[in-house]
Structures are given as structure tokens and as C-alpha cells.
Image (cartoon, rainbow, N blue to C red; front, top):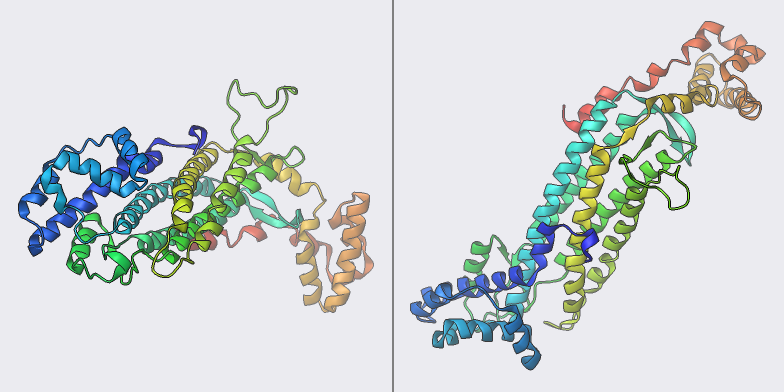
Length: 432
């Protein structure tokens, strides 16, 4: 991933230094287990742990150019450090034992970073949602004014979505955190299952029940699909902010830094560049989902058609999502909210957002639903088309006035009616 959209902690997970360190630990822990079984001398396991672990990446690359095999290149370099006892390393193992177990470790490390990112985002969303719990704003369906809601409720909905994402990611982390040290075609013919159990315990992984030489890729597909869902939740919230920042709406906007420039040509511009960027980054994360799903289908017990895919989507999807979550958290923490503009937009249609209350009141007063709908709609359309006050039109309508006294109509236009269950919803969302 390019540095522009990368953060150091996540990048380090995918750097060669971390990968080779994990490979070393897999081999070294396996040696311990093999020594305990008497398969290799204890002194061999001791020598592996005692070697210099400052791996020379250039030297490994040099060996790989000749061997054209990455694990063999690493083992050859490790042998240069360990000496003659290195002949006992990798006993009964195959490359996938190292590669798949390593990927499991890296994905769990990445998941831990992403879970911390989600914690920060959830905290930011909760803070702003509570601050604007009763900040009245118009709810929109199809982009058109519907009925009042609160800005806090808008954010509470997104908070709930990211809480679900947190649950999904925890489950995906658990599913992908599996170890396979089962030898060629996964039969354990050349290595005892206790070696796998030992390595898994040391690395904080579960054992893969049936590895067929590789860890089944449905686990990885579920992991990357979860990243895709999180990315879509990011885009959903980013798109909401972009719409609210539109000049015609202007109910909320990204923070505009002193000295920031919105356009090279138009000095007045304050563009939603961060949330637009998040929309694009979400596409990159989701682009990993289909290849991950296609990786599930491999030939017989093992092929490497998945390998090249995972070398790309592993770093790219996790690094991009890490950056996107951190960026979205910053947007929420510094979000500029305009309650006065929200109220102005509420008032802009002359009270039309109370139409359902009038409809229901007319049905309660004895009119049929069809008759009530027709009475309310004709006044609503007149208010819409001629920019007239909806409440005044209702009071002047003979059919409506016959069913509802003026004071009753006034009571139907109370904004507090639409916020009476806000506390109950917040209690559900925030467990308060």
C-alpha cells in the first residue's frame, strides 16, 4: 500500500522483518516439540533459539533468486546461522505449515489493530451522539424531507452498525486464528499432531481440525468479507456527512483547518475531501472480498493459486482499512455541526413534516383513512407548490376543521412528539 494511506503499526505487520520473525518462531517452537518427542536432539532446538535472529533480508532474497522458493531460502539462511544442527529444523514439515500459520498470526495481529481502531471510532461516535441527542433535524427518505429525528439518533444508528462490525471482526479473528503443522497433504504421517498443538498454543492460535496441507480458505474468505462490511459502514457514514455538507443542506461539515485550501481555482470552496476519500478507500477494501471468496476453491489437497492473491490483499485491505477507520474517527471528533441550519431546514417546508400526525388524528376523529389521506395530501401539495403554511391551510380546510378544532391542530405540530422515545433508543444502543 502507498505511504499516503498507511499507518506504521499496521505496515510493520506485513514487513519482511515481522514475517521472518514469525517463520522463525514457528520453526523454533516446532523444534521444541520435536525434541520433547525425541525426534530431534534437544541441543538442536537449543541451537535454533540461540542463533542470531537478525535476519538478512537481502541474503534471503539472494538465495530465493536461485532456489525460487521462499521458505527454502529462509531455511537456508537460518541454517547459515544455526550451523550443522540446522539439519533437524523443519523435520516432517512442509512449506504450507509455515506460510499458513504465519498468515494466521499476521491476520490476528491486523485484527487487533483494527479492533483498537473500532474502539476509538465508537468512542468518538458516542460522544457526539450524546452531545446532539436532542438536536432536532429533518429525517429524509429518498433524499426528501420525511419526519423529524435528531442528529444524535443519526449517529447512534452508525454507532450500532460499528458495534456489530466489532462483533463480526472478533468472530472473524477467532475463525482465522488457526495453526496447521500437519505435513504433506495434511495426514500427520511425518509429524506428530502434538507438534501442531504445541506451536498453536505458543502462538495463541487454535489447531486446524483438517488442514489438507493448507488451512481451508473459507476462514480467510470470512475474514476479508468482514473487512468489506466494515468498509461499507465507513462509506455509509462518510456519504451521510458528504450529503449534510452540501451547500443546499449545510447541517454538518468536516472541520476546515486554518490555511487549508478547498480549490486551486475557487478560494471559497470547503470541500468534503476526507469523506470523499473514505468512499474511495472503501472500494479498495471491498475489492479484496471477491478474490478471497475465489480462493476457497483450490485443487485437491493444495495448490498455490491463492498465494499471490493473499500476498496482495492481506496487506492492502488491512492497511487501507486501518487508515480509513482512523481518518473517520478524526472526522467525527472534529465534526462541525450546525443546529440552527438544521432548524431552518426543518422549517423550510412550512410544517409539512407533521402530515402523518394530522392523518392519524383525522382517522381517530372518524374519517376513513382514504378520506383522511386525501384531505391531508391536498393541503400538503398546496403548501408545497405555493410555499404556504401547512398548518394555516389545514385550519382553513372545511373538512379538516369539522373534524379537528384549531387547538387540536396546533397540538399536532409539537416537535417534542418526535423526540419522546429518544432516551429509550439511546438506552438500547449505549446500554445506559
